Image 1 (cartoon, rainbow, N blue to C red):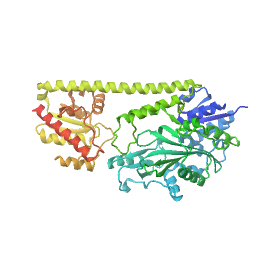
Image 2: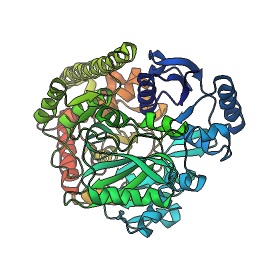
Image 3: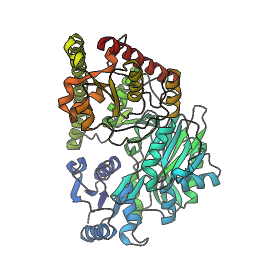
Image 4: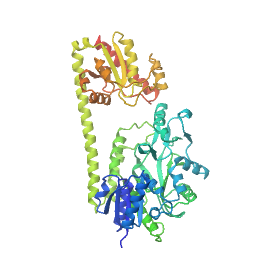
Length: 564
């Protein structure tokens, strides 16, 4: 009877790559996903299954056992943390769980908890970033920005179901408070010192505490420019010190199955442990294409085979997730290259790298000419993203031209000026720009009634950050007692003139109140020289915030001249 496997969460990158890997190996593959996904179109898929809710233990267990009873799987692959946690909650000696090739419960729990991983690494003498665990808003420590905030776990269980965890680079106190307010209800949050540099992963296949295979890669393009999952990466020989540190961790946990130990390497070559990924990883395609087929290795362990010795893989071989890399390319083009927290590249060098497939040194994730349905789906995703980006930019340019013409018409209408008594200033959060403009208008336009508000539904009663209060004070404006409010129907009906700060403000306003469009103008167009958008100083350095407030000052002077 031919071997048959099932890949859970086949809608993930690791799941799709595993489907293709096992399928190319001549294995019958069932794909399971909560919803329709690209993997269901793969030629390698033998059976498609709607995955049971992983948060309902009894339901999920009954579902996977019923499938295993019917098809007698050789291997069960939990591709994401969702299905991994569901398998973890099964009994350790459950025959179905054993087919998933998982470590012990204790080892898994340590790997899935970033704080426990951090403590273990520190105890083993492995370098880790400075870290403080925050468990309450009443116990928030000082910070030297930027810092990195992380939820303790990558997947959080709430009353509404599973909530993705988060990792964020935080540049100022207000952003830190926002993060803590959002995630502390789900559990403690790590505050770590920011480590510059790039990500590097050491991947392993273990059998009952013994390392069998390994692989190493470094990230070339990281999703958010400052870090995160890679869209472009290359294989490397494992640096000896990182390899030994990673192996020491997994040896201590008596690991079983696959795992990736992730580090960050700074510009001085020093490395710091980030986390353990206890499942197949998103950049799995690189390892497979370079010569280490981890899914087939998992199958061998599940079947009790004697695996070949460590494969000799290609070094300095590249793999690209083209769907994720297109947004990276666009972000890299627009990025501030003076920002030390961003890992930007020369745009011309980044584009030149697209020549590597022509010389056989690069492959693209999921692109398999024997699996054309998946390849076509990937190409459609790329085309759709490019089209949406182009359409979005075209619409923004068209809106910008319209607003400039609208402003010119308003400027010429003397009768319109006589009708204005009530002026409303709007920005996103009503924390920095609009309250500053409103306070300034109360001085310069004393004969007019003035209000300010924000368009963000989540912003109520928030204070202006202290650093912004200080900058405003140098301009003669006191924002120390300001509390944000959300714009309402009453605000919009009341206003004879609505002044917004940027195109997003305008779009949000007229989407909800289309009748306000003719009474709305861009504040920056009254400046000298005029500008369409006034940037948000929230989180910006003091010098930049000062320049933004200067723009608002000249805008108010232009508005004053027009009105009077």
